Structures are given as C-alpha cells and as structure tokens.
Amino acid sequence: MDDEPRGQVAWPRDAWRLRILLDAPSLKPPSVEYAVFPGDPIIQFAADLHRVDHIYQARLNEVDDLERRQTMRKIQLAAVWNRLFHAIRGDEVYLFVPGCSDIALMSNASAGRRWVVTKPVQISDRTVAWSVPFEAVAGEEAEVHLAESNALDLVVLDNGPRR
Image (tube, rainbow, N blue to C red):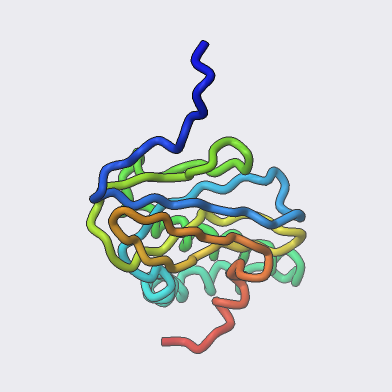
C-alpha cells in the first residue's frame, strides 16, 4: 500500500464544481431531485401558472370542502413547478442525498449565473422547492445551501402578485 497522503483530485481548469449543503431536518426523506437551470425559473413558473390558472380554478370551484381544495391547490402548484423540468434532459436531473458525496456536480458547461432548482418536496405540511442562484466560475467551486429558511413555499408564490 502507498503511505503517501492523497490530495484532492485535480479537475480541468475550464470546469466548475457545485457543492450542495442540505439543512432541512423536517424533510423526510432527506433527499431532493435537482437540476441546474440557466435562468430564474420563478418567472417561467408564474407564466405557466397564469396560462393554466383558469382551468385549475374551475376544478377547485367544484370542491366544497376547504381542506380538500387546499390539498388540490398544492398538487396543482407542484404539477406546474414540475413542468419546469420538461426543458431539462433526463440525464441532467440529479438526486442529492446528504453524505453520499462531497461534490454534487462537476461541469465544463459555460460559466455564469445559474440556479439550483429542486423538484417539489414536503416539509411539514408545506409544499416547497428551492431555486437558489449561484455563480459558476471556471476552475472554482460554488456552494449552495438548501435550508428550510430559503425554501420557496409554492402556496406563498401562488399568493404573490398576479402577472
């Protein structure tokens, strides 16, 4: 056996790395599906929601029970958020499980502003997702924190100003 200490593996100078830190103790199981988006997905989410809202609202109006209507709305919002991933190739959607890897992603894609976007998950009774911007810089590592404090509650996004 070789007794020499092993250093970090060198990566190509034009590649950037992404480290994700997940701090959401109420998330069960503690894993998220994510992708790296080239633009802010919230703008597209709002546009997609606006496009289908009249259909979704008609379905909600058919339900008298308030709790059931709230549950249906969460499902509708999650479906609209999930549509954001239709533009992403399947091999570019990843599963992050804390402790499985130090580096979540390494890429030689062009540098610039990017967003780590997750599929919707449940934290307590809230339907949330993350959309966290970061700067991808060739030869450097970006760190993105996914915490309960920066999770986007889809119901709150829905209650925002209509476009």
